[in-house]
Image (cartoon, rainbow, N blue to C red):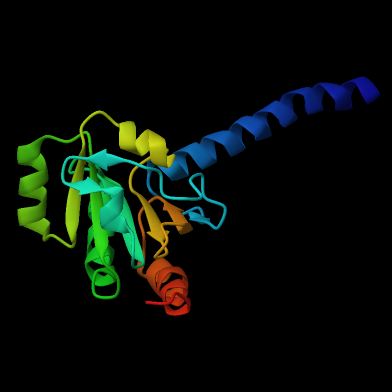
Length: 173
């Protein structure tokens, strides 16, 4: 009897672990929010960086939202209206990740441009420096360049209203 139980466990435990891994992976690939919220970001302070169109100096002196995006990224398209709304409350700076100029331009013409400025990350070095693991990824910085909120995946209205805006209200302007 004990042997029978052990055989079942040898099958069930790895199966459940694999199922959990596949579920989390599928959720991330499909852009399903799995919380996305991180108060312990991978980048605690704004790294020194400069990409064409944007430098770290642009992001200091006031709270700002930095969004890594691409025209080919479907979750970025889903997030775009939320960024447009966020731009009414905080300057939004975009970092365009490994995109063609004409594709980026067409995307912004078609969907609107919520960005104060856009940096061009042609080789992914800025994304690596910031600890970006997937698109879209957004960072809320305080006036000193400290990351106070990191969100992996598309921002939703709920994220805007229950995380970003309350944090902005706590920040001195």
